[in-house]
Image (cartoon, rainbow over all chains, first blue to last red; front, side, top):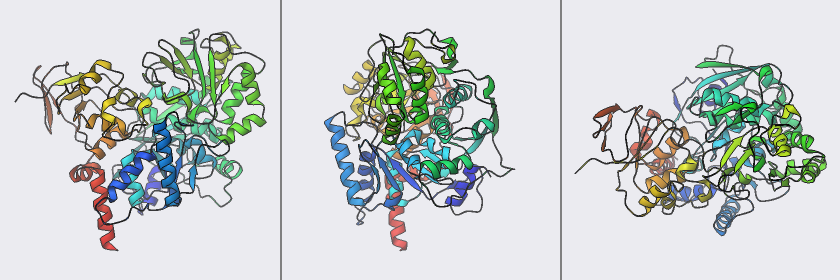
Length: 429
Length: 168
């Protein structure tokens, strides 16, 4: 069996499962963000007229993190957040991360850094980028608010069809200024936006083995951009290191590995030794080209951050490139760390000073401008170059603008020139 | 009575940002989301709000309709207008949200239409009455049939809750 088959078999109390089987896996962690406001409505609706008082199945397995609109951009959001806080208090939900500079942040960073996600777990989240948590060897997938209300009620995901798995083998050593974001953009371009729909992407190979968990989170985060149900890196020594040293997990963590005779629907092989920095062009994430193809285009707004690339090593790359230099006139740069913890680490390491000194605006941890709700909307006809994960028309708040996606290295190098720039070329587009 | 019409024809990879832009996500109630359906497609949104699009009207699209966010507003906003979506294929979360909320989705690979064409949307085929072309329907995932039959995920979950309580 593949890793996901093993996880589903365990969670459904079965010896084995095969592709296409319908199972009801017990959920180990159920995550929501501000859309918990809608989950609560639907949850109360389930219980209406039943004669039973609304009760969540297990408050210790529910996580709620405010990140999409922090601090609230409108009274409507503030009222929704207030309603969620009241529900959290009434139901004893301890894994709640409010708007705070110390322990707040983006759900897809808060869950791993607090040790909430373990290898072999079934994780569901009312966010499509819940695929991120496959980086720790969990089966993690996005669901809608009504489905979450069902999980809160029953404690399992109902009627899950065991997905087929695509094996992605990545060999080679990443060249300088090429990283996990370039790899996943390349893969999404290769598979297409629907190339892995109803499939799992299971990552293997020397380049993945050598990749820190932060990079694996970037990979699995964007698995959904190829339509995948989930991305997963089988847990290994690096996973154990991350859980022990960065997530403070002290208890033993069993690993789940695929069987040697696991059946894959197909295999995709990539050699990163020859990989160039990649850019996803408007308005689909699979419209991917080497940076050279679009180098020289003027950029109005650079964005570094998000659940894809707002981690400490991402900020380190940007700080290294921008230290002692300036963001080009005519270009603005916004940086938003993925969590309060990362923000504090970036402060301690001097990265925030380097970035602010260069002219970047370092914002609070959260989703920031990624989904066009508040902070950093684009003007008509403007172009953004962003380390986020989506470039759909209107994504950053304006259908008359364009969003290009790239790595932190490409974003930072481009901030200096004001044009899309190959970071390997030392400052010329 | 004439067949329903294709009121909007779109291409591949129609994202949830096109169906329901992120900036309206603070609005969650199914009674309020329909006003923002296809908000960035101004003229069509205006027709919807003017009540100019009859229930049962068809949106025709290509591959991967509903890609992107898990936002359920992208389903409730279409359900509010009782639109039927006929596409070559759907993105996973959108498809499941639609089944959960009872929005009618029909997967008909190859389907082609122009705005204004009359379509009959059956269980096994979609017929473009105007062009005379027929397109077989690919059934929705069998695993979800029980939810469709229950009338959506809320009644389904409610029934499961009561069954479980009865066993205790």
